[in-house]
Image 1: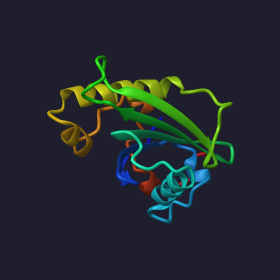
Image 2: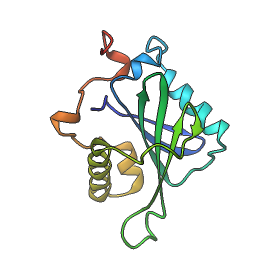
Image 3: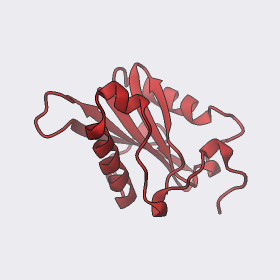
Image 4: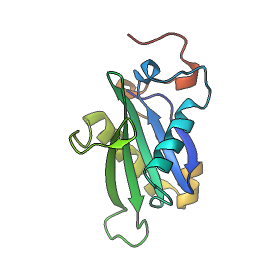
Length: 152
């Protein structure tokens, strides 16, 4: 399941962030930019400057660890079968090679985002436009910063 996405630019890279329920256990939602600050620090610490044409991040927790699945999209126009996509997984801002690449919900999300990009007139329209409608099973329909009580 995913909270409503957050769209920001980090180190010159447009970034779409999909927080997952459970992260309220590791972030203080009272700080209305806690996610953005954390990700800026992660990019800076790992020298992720101008990291592809755009990124999609799935932000989740593994118990008390903060997990970031950083999907890097590049070569939008020149790669024959859609963008060239790479992924880096971080655990507490450190590259983690032992964790799997994705879960099923993440793959559905990434597919819907790519479909949305196809339907957009330009990359800029895609990034600034609305996000795709997610299936009810994976759509929390709320912003992370608006949740009222902890999910247990």
